[in-house]
Length: 355
Image 1: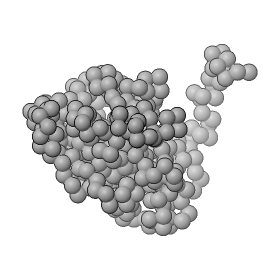
Image 2: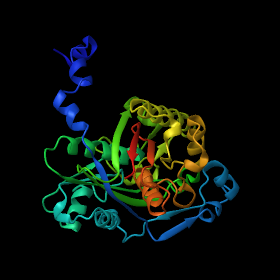
Image 3: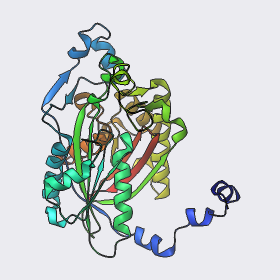
Image 4: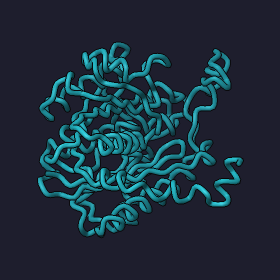
């Protein structure tokens, strides 16, 4: 029977929406976030770099994005190296070594090279010889997708395991410098988190993710893949750089981040009043504030670092999360809500109870 017929008649509905009892039981087990960390490039790029051309003013940038500065990776600050720095710090916080890792997932849209995966390069840097390693592409929703995969793998395991989710993006290298209204948004950065199926530590309660490939062209890179391989002509015409429909993305980002946040809270019997800390994707200040207003969450509960780091894509949420943890803003017993939206289109939300 054809796949579309099966889907239309609902013959796979039960298998898709109703997990087997064993799976349901496993997903109830404790999956912990034992360590978080981040690493940033040394170079700081202020708004003056963009205002020098006269195309935009500092006032325009601040009003539209809320970003004062962002980081830019230098030629020797390779993505796998910056990710490894974050990974080592997260592993130290988790109290594990490279030999304890069972898997490494790297979420990125700017891999260090097309082959091998950046995750395999991180594995080599760490010396994590027994760890499986692979990359995952979900743009700015990357951390949530990585956490979703890690949670599923750990919940399905019948023995204690550790999964490193590394997140790195160098978006400054795939934006057209002449398109100032896009390039002002992005910064480079890396982060990492260690997930383990152990009965202690901050609990990753749940992750919900979704996507809509039909709207892919709202945020995409037209060329450079196997359909239209890289050429100098395509590069010079901007076809190998980020293309985005800002107004449409703004509306969808606010809607989807709000909906997914409320969905996961309702699923677990919480309301927005129960949330102690909200860590949204740091797309720009206007989106963050709009989502906060839709959720009716007090501004003091919202973590914001986009003003000094910019939009770091898949590294955005884990950088903000780690900064909040290290600053003591996230305390034991806190309910932490995370939400993201990115290219694909992809979006999602996660809940964690800090222990």
